[in-house]
Image (cartoon, rainbow, N blue to C red):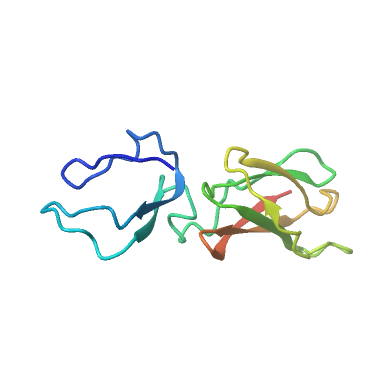
Amino acid sequence: MECCTCVAGKVNPTALGWSDGIHSVLLLELVRTTDGRPIFGAFRSRFRLGNAATNVLLNRDLNVDPNMLQAVDSSGLVQITHRAIGAAWVRVKNEVSNPPVQGENTDWSSWMTFNSSVVNMPWRVAPFSNHGTRYVTAQYWADYSAAYFVHGSLQV
């Protein structure tokens, strides 16, 4: 917990060293208004910091990422680049390839702890011996919601 003084009612999160992600602020009953009156009760607020042009948690319109998947080798190993700074959990699934690949696994993975500092994650899609497009969906849990989805594709 960090304590700070507001200047003219404003706090500069960057000056406090806060990183991109989801943060919360708690004002206790001890806080007084600018004219010295006490507030009626504790106040809690959550807010998000970051670049809305690149983070799905700040802009849900970023649900398709053309740079999400990069091939690692021809066996179907890919690297997923996540753009969800502030998420706590992630799960991933392969969507049906085009054309479909026999025996392709399209089940969701288990939820995994998401570390925003590790944006690249290995993942396996259908082998590249069958040419076509591979589709992957990542779902993120952040701030008590799992409503953040990003879809990516890779032509092989």
